[in-house]
Image (cartoon, rainbow, N blue to C red; front, side):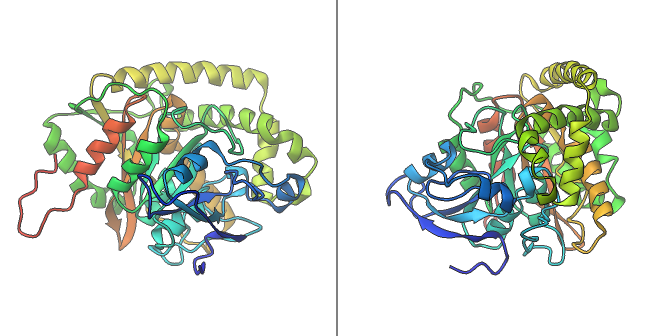
Length: 403
């Protein structure tokens, strides 16, 4: 197999299949290089980290389940270092090619996985989503991407960044396959299936978009409004007041968890880490106990508020990203600012531990742009089923009731 997109680690292409029978037989997949694969080294996007860690002795739990279902693993894909990024540019291994938006980033940190699926190198791929690292690349690359309810997919064998936010997510080119993978990976308890009855619209999130982006999403938002009849406009920031405050709560908790998870190794290897990622770790090291304690309390308040809004069959609609993928040749400071602004809308589901799916339903100037739906904790299956119906393609000449 070839890798014309630079999606895989330099020696990351291989073939592994444990059985030719099962619900995913005949399908190929790739995994972000945070996931252990027996006999392979895990680098977390950093060559020094790879040298310091032996080859894995066992598969990550999610990888093992997919292999036992008949899927064939074709390799390990590039990630932003330690998954501590959102643009998909790795200082050691480069940036994968976004086949759907040439000359633009794939998004990160699950950059290689998104590039591999978008470019047709595999049928689906595993990534991780801590602050948006599946949903944002899905939007940039024209893919379906799911961040499941926190804790519904085991993280055993996955390099941690911020454990109370980290989730195993995945990409596919169609909603049906996304759901087939979910049926294998979502092994923790779910809420009872429900028919969505109410639509919430995150007005402050949509207000951040450029007019052209909002215009591109408007027809799909209208379809949702027509389905539900009435819509309740909300501010995604809720009790945090504004989206900048919401992001700051996320940043503080994530930073402390990231430093706890990786700070010991980082302090011995500052010179081996890309400057932008090293700066994030320096900022993480400077976060105080008082800041974290206050942010944790605010997180509880926010989670309770959003959980109350989403109960009894509500779905929340919001943009998957601020806009289409930024250009690769932008200055690193500009890309860093874009990442921070994107976190204003992508941090809500991590904070509240809710599932969110990005749907590839729009384009802006020929570039992919995703629209997201969020459900209550444990409502993953309902969210997937609704998304599948919403994005069905009608037969030529037919009148499709997508709901």
